[in-house]
Length: 397
Image 1 (cartoon, rainbow, N blue to C red):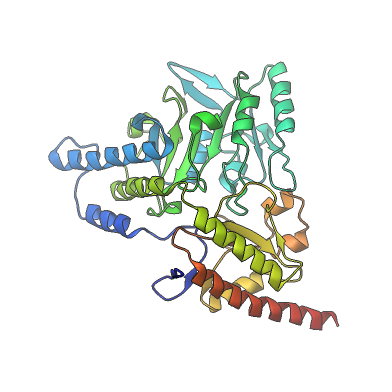
Image 2: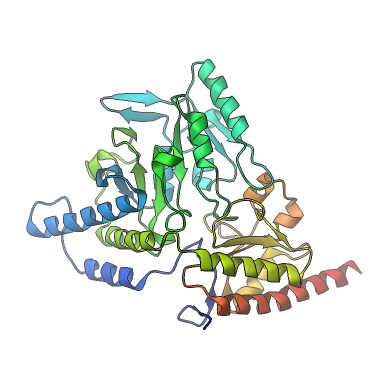
């Protein structure tokens, strides 16, 4: 029997890359922890109980990443984790390492493109190809040139793109950086729970996670280190919380929910074959409705749950409003900007024309998404896109 997962209001939710629905078990835990009293830095019984919740969650998130628990520092979200990692100064044991350049690409999350604590003059954007894959040869040449000049880059490359689902060749990048002294930060927000996280295989010295992408609460994230002795200078100072990596009283309820969500997501990793089949069927149906449909990133490795497409002459802004009125939640791309529909910098970086990029729609499935939801979306899409194209043809005439 086909599965059908909707929100409480009967709407079809196909925007899991923006935020996954809160898992019921996680919601129960968060609500229960919110009734408790105790600062995890306090030494009395209530404080020790709060500390135990935080440390249990730390171990759970660490298992998701395959690292010791001491390598996990909780943050308010992945944006804070990214900005913390993008520091020209990292602590290395009792000393420090300094980085003169930040190398990244303009398909990254805005918090990475903004450069963290690197000055604007030290930030460089690397090109990507038509599939959205970073040009590793250009990266290798730039790292070598900087090394020969006595300078050292920090490289920030995401594991998976939130808009297209495109996976970056992190293992290949790791081979390029091996032995150069450069370090690699990975935004793993979209990858967590959907593909295995392998910090050593990726060559990642640090990575960023977000709880609400894996069915945890909003407002919790983590900076994960491969080597606890090599870490960025803290962004928030003034307290010794999180092993001096991030000052401020921990959000115990959100962190506890994050930990449980991480455990549940880890159990699901690798079981996305059925969702990939649904996604592929969706894309075939879209191309059947309109033969000139363009699926972005279709020819390269992608997350199993993500479909980003456009139809010439169909405005994403108009389509999203109509789909929302029809009870269907999808996106025009990343949900982490102004909340307005604009031209995706990710697609422009891939060489997509501004006119086509302006029509990009992202459908992102969850583990519980089913054929019923996809059929509902396709039926609405056929009618809505048909009306938009017909109106456009009338204006042209």
